[in-house]
Length: 222
Image (cartoon, rainbow, N blue to C red; front, side, top):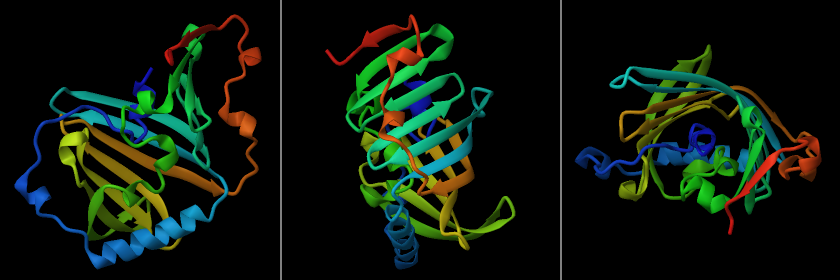
């Protein structure tokens, strides 16, 4: 159940080390200027709807998993559709619907994310707890992008050591995110479409049992 959230740049697999190179990284002015502009633009949107491709790869384990998803954001609320999962949150509780099993799991948001980044923060994740460095310009899907690396300030508390962020220079929007997990897992998220300020009803972020006749409910909040 929690796998669906972790594969959304939420971030899987714990580790126990951080290299001295990363520890010595510091935030640079060019990266900060770009990220501040990106944050300012993103925060100006009332809602965001984005579709994406995600890939989990671990070469050591000879594993590769591809998924497609759509996320809708409204403040701290989110609606995430990822293959067989639908995850809804009103900012406090979450409902994870597993359609193939006709089950829904209810959790507190903090319990579901395990203290990591939650989906509502995905387009402003760099604002808290990160150092960052500008790495240069790269072409991603035919678009010129800024490449900025993010490093957690408290790496021992995170499941990853580096996040590679690619920002479309012309649109000033995130084009790709690569999360480098400590256990060798690499999560790549390609943004396919990004639509701000669509009219999104609050009902999209709350589970409606009437839509799922006979569904089994597992409430983990108590």
